[in-house]
Image 1 (cartoon, rainbow, N blue to C red):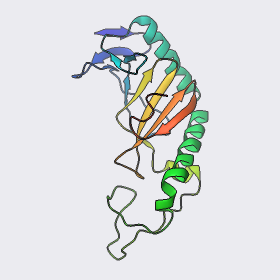
Image 2 (image 1 turned 30 degrees about the horizontal axis):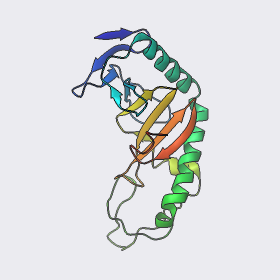
Image 3 (image 1 turned 120 degrees about the vertical axis):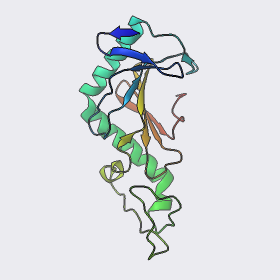
Image 4 (image 1 turned 90 degrees about the vertical axis):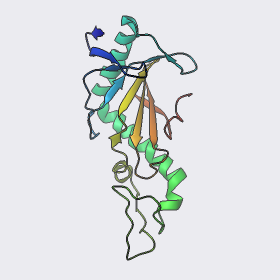
Length: 180
């Protein structure tokens, strides 16, 4: 077991992944989540050794800066994710559509064959479909944070946001932002 000044106790799970023991609450998101503290190599493969103090200090610095600038980062996340929605999904959801998989936001209406268009025309409306983090965030090298999200628009692929130096650098499905 390792203790760190900022992260506190660091635990190892059954898959040899390193996490902050205490869960973290991030403003604008619903649940408290785990913080993955794995170190990754240049191919984004996990290094299965406990991160050293220098790596943990760099990760702590990344997380502190992220939390201090969360209001601006959320605006960037909203804008980038909404742009992806317009580019990839709007053609399906902004006209009457058949509900194949129901979720908390999109439900079948037995009285109608088709669901009404979602009318997502702002980044704020779109954010209502993506405000739950999927279990954990990943802090990695080069001041990078990866946030996998539950995404009511596409629950199969989810939505993942990659942030470097507090700027969104990529938005994609879960696992699609890894190599940029």
